[in-house]
Amino acid sequence: MYCEADLHTTLDAAFLPLLAQTHAYLKTDLRNLELLDVTALQQALKFLREKRTSHLYFEPVSPQFVLDGNRLLIPGLPLNSNLTDMAVSGEYHLDGRANLYVGLSPMQTLFGNNQKRIERIKSGEAAERRSRGLIYLSLRRTPGSKYKVGLFKKQEQREQQTRLRQEFKRLLLQQPLDTTLHLLR
Image (tube, rainbow, N blue to C red):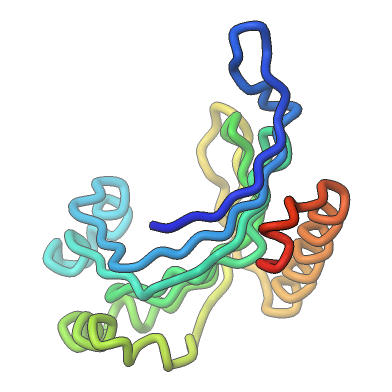
């Protein structure tokens, strides 16, 4: 992972950042990302063979994030893997609250050819294909509770995505980037 960040914070008496007064912009570049034996994922997808869920390969991705106090704003994070195409957006709070929107391809998860998909990811061919057949879920959580999952429509997803992008831009204008990162927007 490569990350370019612009961080503004206030330090307390022990020289630790005060999270409520911390603001950051992050532009990341993730390559060759693999996940091995993620228990939560394997339990959630226990209806699939363990071979399909035990080793995930991800396409390269370059997402941007904004940290605004204890809130991480995710305007768009495509996480396409050998298991499924997935798109994540929303906000996650460091106290455990979450308001996330996830698009995923159930047909690809259930019937996709895992080995062919791995080959396409490794060759770079998969990144040239558009995600198709995504269904959209809303994941919400309050501190100390479990995620509440619900379906939502494509139009709702578009409206939510527009609101997130506007909030993302507003936060960048409110907390101007260092001049070296200004060109990255």
